[in-house]
Structure formats: C-alpha cells, structure tokens
Image (cartoon, rainbow, N blue to C red; front, side, top):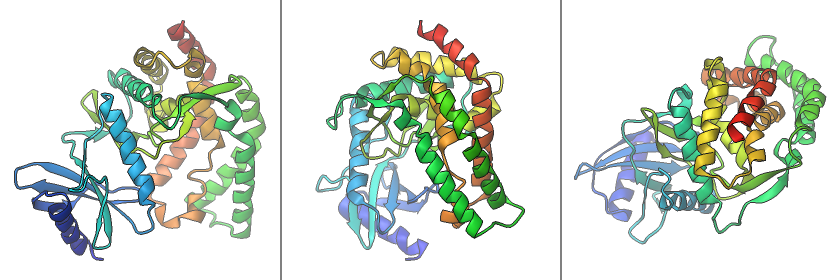
Length: 346
C-alpha cells in the first residue's frame, strides 16, 4: 500500500476499532521496524500509532505492550496504551496491525547523551523499572553465569563466521564495509584479552525481567526529567547490570562527556540503588565491566553491510564507529570507574 493509503487505513482503524474520531493523521517519527503515525482527535487529544509490518509476531508485540502496562501500573513513566473497543492491545484491519498509545509531547530522546541532573533521573527511572519488573509473573530474579552475559566463545564464533563471509565477498577498499571487516579482525584478535578482563566479574550476575531494548532512542526526556520509557520487548530474563550499563554508558554519552561520564555514571548508579535497593552491590559494581565486555563481544553493526545493506546509513556508520571507540575508552578507564563505584556502594 502507498503511504497515503496507509494513512487512510489508520484513520479508519482509529474510528472503527478505537472509537477515536481523527481530525488529522500524519506520519510520525521513523521506527526501526515499524511505520509510526501521529493522530489528533476532534477533542484535541493526540495519539501515537505504531503500525507493524507484515510478518510481525503480533502476539509478541502484545506481550511487550502488556509489560509496559505493568511497569506503568507500578509508577514508571510509560505512555498509556489505548485499548480497542473489545479491550485488545492491538487492532488489525485492512492489512495493517496497529497499537495506539498516548502521545508524549515536548520531549526528546536521550540520544544526545546524558549530562547534569539527567544522570540521576535516568538511574532512578531504571531502578524503579527494575524494581517493578522483578515482581513480574514470568518469574523472580535469578542468578545467571556472568560468562553468559558477555559470551566470549559465542562472540568468537560469530566473528569467525563474519570474517569468512567477508573473505568470500571482499568489500571495496574504502568505506564502511571495509572498516567493518577490519574491525571484526581486531575484535577477534582482542578476545583473549577480553576474556581475561571478564574473569574479574562475579561468577554470577542477577538476571530478571527487564525492558529488553533500553537504548537511548527509547528513553524520552523532558528537560532533566524522564518523561517516558517506550518500546518494551516481550518479558524475558536478562542481566539488570547489562541493561543499566547499556543506557547510562551509551557510547555517544561516553565519547561526548570524556571528563564527566565516570562521575555521571556514579550518580546514576547511586540513584538506581536508592530506587531499587534489592539489586546486589556486586551487580552494580559490574556495570562498567559488563558494558565494556558486551560491546567487545558484539558484532553489531559490523554485520549490517552483509545482512541488511539497506540499513547502512550515515547515522548507523557514525554509531558503529562510536561503539568501537567507546569500547576502548571504557577498558582504558575501567579501574578508575570501578573505584568510584566502590565509594558509592560502600
């Protein structure tokens, strides 16, 4: 369908299945795997509409929306889901499946990085989120082997496979693809040293139900406060330390705040602990080491020129290079970061 036809279908779904009378429907912010729309009803209410592509596992998306609802019920700032006239979380008609949530106005994503009071605000919000999700029916927090959180052996296999594919189809000598191939070689050669550094992690880390995709685009800020946490994934157990580190040590933040990311991280971890004192201090101390190890073991976005060449944009290229550079910065200052955290966690 054309974009104009999609807008018409979305307007019809809102009117028929949500009893929202749309005065205007237009395309909204681009999604990673969805087409998004903004709608305004005749009473002036504003709505965010997410349209899922064909082939989407709609049941998984329902579970993700329900997870967000459970976090909202516990006081986490999550946009309210608008239910259909039959009480559903997702409506389907005219070849489209959509979900509708309240529109959160006057916000920006955290992609610009953390600074000032945002560090503590984000730490507190993630702490509230994890405390709420620790009570989710999928199951309570449990220990998981640290080697499963930063899986060096798996990273080695994936990098070797990637390099074999690059060998079979060598990239042009210039450009992002060539950088990806060269960086994959460097990552593979560095894995023994990464493994040695990860030996200093606790034997186990705490895994629990988490957001699942708590990256900076999914955190909406209004000034120095967290306005909304969006785009949950279906409930599953992952390391709480990994998720906290993923957002507070976002590569763009680390590189943009060379003199502030360590004290900023400490403020975020302190605020997290105040909001969620149940998570072990050992997990919180592990945040920077897990963040560095996870980045070092990741093949994203090195695999994108082969797997999803259409996804390679200037923004993705810049992010890929930032991830690689930030990994080196985290390793270089890891002892300092952990020492600061020890003072916070005493």
